[in-house]
Amino acid sequence: MSSSVNRLQPALRDCRDMALNSLTTLLSEMFDKSEQALLDFIDKADTNQGQFQFIDAISVVNSNRKLVEQRFREEIARGFAEYLSEKPISYAMPLLEVQIQAQENLELVDDQELDKRLSLQNMISRTQSQCFQDLYALMQRLSMVRGGVKLADQDIPAGPVHTASAFQVAAVDFGFESNVLLIMYALFEKFVMRELGDFYKQFNEKLIAAGVFPNLKLEVPKHPKSPDKPPFMEEEEVADEAETKHGNVTPQMRTAGGKQQASPPRQGDASSPQSGDQEVALGEEIFNSIRNLMADRRRQDPKYSSHPQFNPDAAPRAMVDTPVLISAIDKIQPIHSASFLPEIGSKGEKPTTADVDAKILDQVRERLIEERERLFQGVDRNSIPSADLDTIELVGMLFEHVLNEEDLPNIAKALISHLHTPYLKVAILDHHFLIDSRHIARQLLNLMVESGLQWIDENDLRRGIYYPMQEGVNRILAEFKKDVDIFIDVFEALTKQIEELSQKAKIVETRAQEAAKGRER
Image (cartoon, rainbow, N blue to C red; front, top):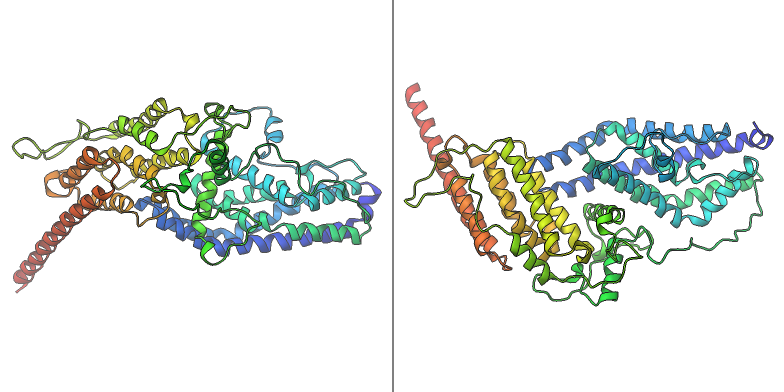
């Protein structure tokens, strides 16, 4: 152990204890506020399975937070111990690209793993930018303690890399699926990483008090030099830049009628205080951060190498506007439900059953993917605004959730999936569809899933809601162009059918109870 490290052991232990106290306090406050974010996502979930997932997540957080906090503390303490032992901080789960490239066996990762990695890398990058001066001073002082050899970013104990990695390791104990884990990562960035500025100032002050580089002069720019287009630019900033370059109205500024309106306040800016009317639901802010992840993933996807919003070196090009995109969707929209689904015959006869097995559902999944690919064949994906690309992907995820609804009859899944392209149009015309559970198209989708769970009997399709639901689906496929009033009509008609079925069920139940009482007499 070097003499300076040995001499400064008491001060460095004080720094460790301060880090453990400060970071654990921030983490605990994050968990206190996580329930509200998850409640917001329950409202946004479009299936019972999705709602139960977030309800369960609240319970899991409450049950396991102490375990996760303890694991987080252990990881932070281990990093300090390795620093004091003059070793590089070790990482059980490589996080930075330089760490990943150093692995002996490089493996391909799927989109979910890439999203998680990008989420962590982005929060590190933003924290490094936000706290640049204090982190620079801290790195200089900690390097001086270790003999003057410059420390790598990942070897700063309680630095952004180490802190994010500690939560990455600790959060494994939750056992969350990728979508919920991404929400927890976004919450960690908001309530922990963005609040590290004061901690780094205090860390420096303790080292100064111990005589470590007290007269350090920071001959560095206030912020690190930014490239022409920051690699982690917020989604709305990208869209605004595209509008300036190409004269387009951004998707965030379009209404269904094509009129321009003021953009909503941008979320995720740590320097912009939010109050009053500017404050949005926490769940919506986290939702926006997940959209930003999609943009980050596309920046690494060769398919988008010519997209000026993702590649700063790409040649400028005009982004397509809404009418062009809607026209392309019209060309891929089916005009009728698939032939494997039973239909009312010409004389009004209704088939009783239909065999929709897992193989057919796999074909349905493939069809939805093919529809989106056909859309990109009709309109170059590198000419579609980033927010519209988000919308296309999110609508696809929405219908994937419907197909994954465990208790929903397969025939209902297959039928509802035919609304994929009409819902693409709805979401492109009105982006509020994705975040407003009161949107009529959202209400209709919820109603179809809920009624499918309760009122479709696969052993006798004539008895329940299948045929009225199919009539509504076919009507939307045939009639929907741009006017969402068709969704109101179908919603009201389906609601009426459900009320009639419910009333009949009550009558049958009442008669059964009366008959049972009569037998008892």
